[in-house]
Length: 204
Image: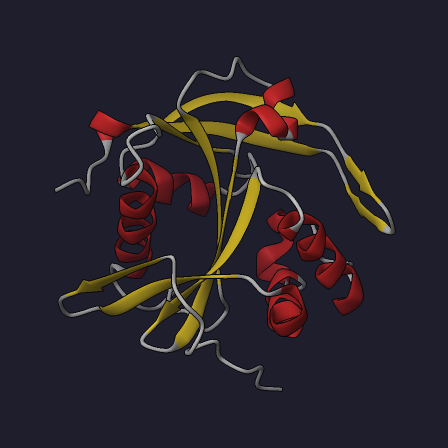
């Protein structure tokens, strides 16, 4: 199975990194990308994403729902024409995370899932380079003062990656379940992490 690569889709952001390649952020198209994303989120390595038992149709429904919102957005990170990660952003005030901490003005939520073939586990510096692009894109908006991440509390690798680029760890919290039409996402024990505009290791 080789899903179509959205190389012709218009990116919202693009950055070239010497020795790494050109990374483009392309909005997810649920109909076009459902098969690709289903392959990613249902792998054992993505168990912390909480969608391991989802069908392709359910994955499409989830991203159609996100696509209908003005507060949540999903992007494919495409390096030199190859999709290598799923990147999601959200307004914490409109998300279940708001039930777990005191949301501050300028907070902006993020999720990141590296693809199985993206190089995150084998290529030195891969995730750091990718995160630098994502953070640069988000902080290009001056209204965004702090990024909020909430990886699964048991996902030590994800937590360590965030710390390496400057995220400060917060409390462990239990995020409530999500019940959408035909789609159920269970509650999640997460570790909050925060990156202020002035604390980003990769800035400049």
